[in-house]
Image (cartoon, rainbow, N blue to C red; front, side, top):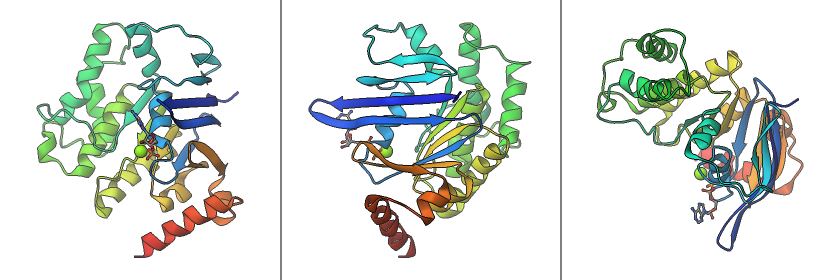
Length: 258
Ligand SMILES: Nc1ncnc2c1ncn2[C@@H]1O[C@H](COP(=O)(O)OP(=O)(O)O)[C@@H](O)[C@H]1O
Ligand SMILES: [Mg+2]
């Protein structure tokens, strides 16, 4: 049974249909890259999967349990929403760190709130657990640094440590490197690679085609609110079946060579 199963997810904003029936499965330990041009619905999908937006139709099944059912019009309490959201860890394009807190405090803040509300428990002292996650992303010597004292790549790794520390079933990234220059991009991508080696299940919206090719178990190409094509990196990058996929990838190669 798949860890996550997304079935016929649809979402409109007013008259604009943004997701037109998205279905895919994610197995434990998979790394899924979602590619596609701007406006294709990638961020909307990311937000619907994470309950930052409520999908209109379809369903989402996690670990055999339906966590979203478009047929039910039940409203969820704030606590139910938080419990659903806690299944997943989120990393955004712009890091979203709190500028007034140190790297360590950025990681411990949510841990402490969740522990206090009884929504999560941690194996040991929270500061120690948080420090170990920061060490894991190579920032063990930066615990007391503020975001403004860190490079963009380091800030993004704090955001990754913060997400990891909550022990999510799946880590989601929405263009995690698009605010970074190439050198810092590589530093974040190598952190993601090491998480992939440790079998972390990840869904990554990315424009880094080489990374998608090297690290993903599955690549999903979206256009106009549909999954046009999905498959192994070899299938998508070396033998794309759909004309849209081919033209997207060739426009990409042209821009990368510029
Ligand atoms: N909150 C919103 N209200 C209205 N339209 C939206 C909203 N969010 C996204 N859209 C529209 O949905 C489409 C897909 O956007 P998005 O999911 O951000 O695409 P991507 O991440 O692939 O660039 C765009 O046309 C965008 O303008
Ligand atoms: Mg987007």
